[in-house]
Image (cartoon, rainbow, N blue to C red; front, side, top):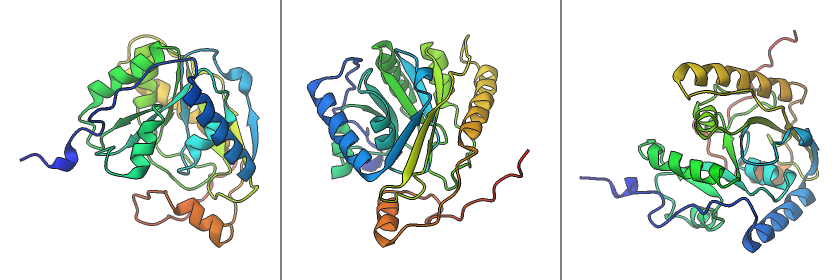
Length: 254
């Protein structure tokens, strides 16, 4: 018998590809930008590295707040979609229903048994001229300059859709400190091309990981903030370890 919890995570959900922002998109973007920039001091570097149209943006992932920070750092057009969240169902909580309501996400199941449908959704988004942001590690981690092994989704989808692949580094969100400094650094697009074979995906993933590590290498790890900042940081973080792990040691310079 099929477990009801394994039913489709989007029973009536269909992505609406678009590059031009709707009124809802504009209002959500403006509200998010206002809140995020009121809480953080955000610096954006490398804006000129952003391709003008469709692209896959691969970012490092330290916090549930990463998508909000990236959205606040980038212009409202082309519309920015996010790959995820990874959920068995998207209609079983208020948070997930609100995420679907934004109509700017492409969720997928943890078992990855709906990847064909998900891939087609991503392709429609990119074909429509929008951008797709992907947390390349597939989960959050600690350490401002750390990076877990990248999953192959970002490279595969960029190759399959024939769009630029852009590394985006987010620093300063390991702890969500009020008026803390946050940097969004956009790297140069990774040169890719050809068919999404395993060899091509693996090779491009190595270059993508190297680019992300270089973009984050100079940002120091911060001490935990006060009680409210610690609560805000962890309220939506989902640690596979069960609790927040310690910060890994930094590799020796050079």
